[in-house]
Image 1 (cartoon, rainbow, N blue to C red):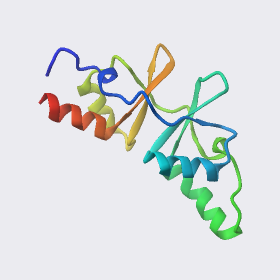
Image 2 (image 1 turned 60 degrees about the vertical axis):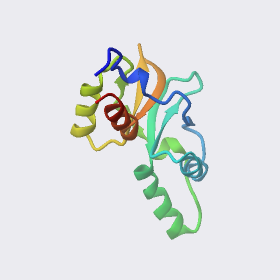
Image 3 (image 1 turned 30 degrees about the horizontal axis):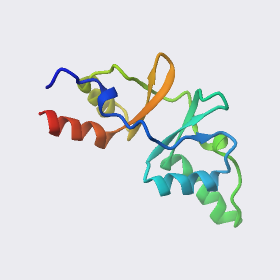
Length: 131
């Protein structure tokens, strides 16, 4: 592996961000449009408050199917207190996190500030490139 094997070198820095108050139907459309399996949810100051995954959206979609109406906001369905990785996390430690948990993506923070998203595919591509 090369000298720079921190996830900061392979994470996505241009990524979808959602707000807690965004209507869930709008958030689902944004996830699909972005081709994202998950997106961080931030408060008005930009602080990470949760993550919304495609899996989280199924409860809302089923309710909409039953009631013929979309109800709720992102904050009603998101996972609160999300697991994160630090930008200086090395590739091996990040890979172990993906093996240990069923997550397809992690928000990446630097000293508590949201700076990126790391998807499984980003890390696998890094292993291919550097391995």
